[in-house]
Image (cartoon, rainbow, N blue to C red; front, side, top):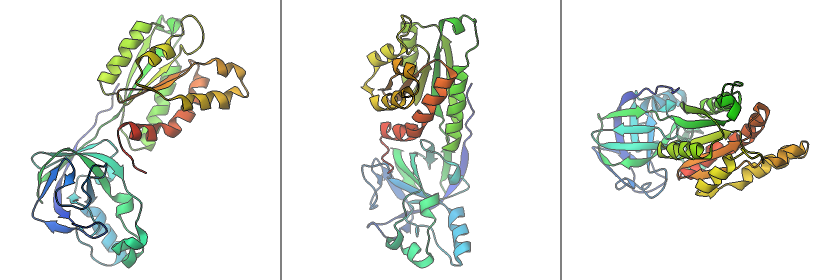
Length: 317
C-alpha cells in the first residue's frame, strides 16, 4: 500500500544573487541555474546547498514581528517564492521551476551566522535558519520572477520482507513485518517524509530473497528491512544473501545491538543480523520476533536519517 503524494504550485516572486558570501543578495531580472547552482552567485559550487529558497510569506511575517520591512534577497536566498508551501517540503522532495529547472531539497534551515548576519545584528534573530530551504540542482535552466514553481513530494520508499516458512503457509500471522511498518511510518512522520511501503511475505528461500533485494535496489527503494532468518538454523539465510549482494557492510549498528541486549540475554548473541549498502539502498536484517524488532528498530532509527543523508551525498552537518 502506498501513500499518494500531491503536488503544490506557486510562483517565483524574486530571483537574487550576490557575488560575495556573507552579504545580502540583490534582485535580478533573471538567473541561470547550472550544475553548480546560480551562475555568478557566491554560494554556487560542488556541494549540497547550491540554491537557497525562502517563502515571501516568511519574510512578510518576520517583517511584521520585527516592525520593519525586509525585502526579497535580504535573507540571502536565491529564490523567493509564494504559495508553494516551502514549510511543508521534506528532504529529497523536488521543486520544478520555470520551463526547465528542477531542484532536489537537501537541507531544511541552517546554522545562524549570528554576529556575521546583518539581519541578526539589527533584530537579534533571523528567519532563514528555521525556514530557509536549500537544494541541489537536478536540471538547470533560466528562472525569472513570475515563473511557476511546483513542489513534487517524494516518499521515503521502504521495502519490508518477512521470511518465514510457516507464516507464508498461513500457519500463523506475520506480526513482525507490520511492526516494522508501524515504526517506519512513525519515523517518517517525525522527519516530515511521506511514507511509501512495499511488503512481502515469503518462505526462507535464498533465491527469492535475492530477487526481492535486487528489485528493491532497481526500484530505488531507500531502505529494505527483512525480518526472520537471522539465526544459525539450516533455513536461516537472510544475512548470507545480503552479505553476498552488498557493496558495503555496516558492522557497527548490529554489533552495538548485540552488545547492548546480549549482556542481559545471551541468546541475542546468536543473531547474525547485518546492515549493508546495496547501490543506494540500505538493508537491515532483523530477527523474527516482535520484541526483537522493537529492540533493533529503536537503535537503527537513531542513525537512519543520517545514514540516508550520507548515502545520498548530503553532508548537512
